[in-house]
Amino acid sequence: MKKLINDPKSVVIEMCQGMVKAFPENLALDEEFMVISRKNPDKNKVNLISGGGSGHEPAHAGFVGKGMLDAAVCGDVFASPSVMQVFNAIKHNHSEQGVLLVIKNYSGDVMNFESAAAMAEDYDIRVDSVCVNDDISIEKKEDRRGVAGTIFVHKIAGALAERGASLRQVKEIAQRVIDNVRTMGIALTSCTVPARGKPTFDLEEDKIEVGVGIHGEAGIFRERLLSAKETAELIIERILGELSVSKEEEVAVLINGFGGTPLQELFILNNEVASLLTNKGITVAKTLVGNYMTSIDMEGGSISVLKLDEQMKRLLSAPCETAAWKETEA
Image 1 (cartoon, rainbow, N blue to C red):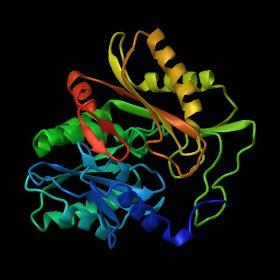
Image 2: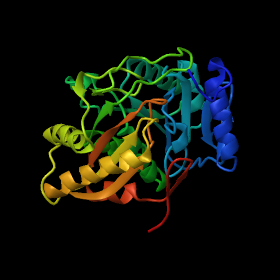
Image 3: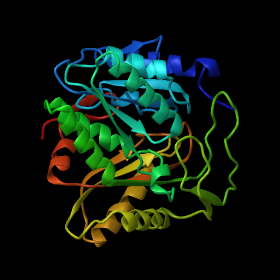
């Protein structure tokens, strides 16, 4: 294992320290509970809190800032943060307008975030939550994982919260994004968890894993090595089979790298996805290409498609200022 680290046991704390030192004007770190938050919080708006296991950087802490999240709870690598971590994130980052928790649909995350929310309510803190399950690789909808589409929830709900919307309104739009986003990913290689020191699964040179998660899990089936065009066709057909998008409707697309894929390849994949959607008469109103929710050093990536309405479209391009995503006024 070759990694630019000091000690596998200190990866998360040192990563968080390094992130805050890179953006000292915007971010603060609670080292006891591993929570990265806005340095100058706005207590007059609904606050958004998300998080989960580390290893997905820039998610989630990279999206803390004006127009997106107010705090991110950083668990160990690929491990849910504890109830007390989440509770303290809520306790120190809530407002009178309430808190919305954005949870990815993994059993540990759901259990610990919801337990922390119940504790916070005992302290008279208004808390509500949404659960993201955009990964169409899983057949049963209730078992679907929250993956890269979570970033759209952060951005759109965060933008509406920044405008002073109520907790009910922010939750409603977050849920609308969840209902209209679908994601699927493929892996060319496995990832290597620092504490484990070896790949989480073995993959032949001429094969790919289709339907991988973001925690180093193997996919739902193994396929021969596909070209960018074939990969785009495979994923887009599956997404559009679930997401009803008519001609002339608008979508946002996220071509998300898993940490080890060159941008060159992600842009090639985006070229194929854009051509496929255009040929179907679907307008791509917003495109994001890059590492947004990774799986440490895995080679591969995912495609997310969000069906837009006018409100979501406006909020997606609303100003934000975070480490990993910046938008300015048009």
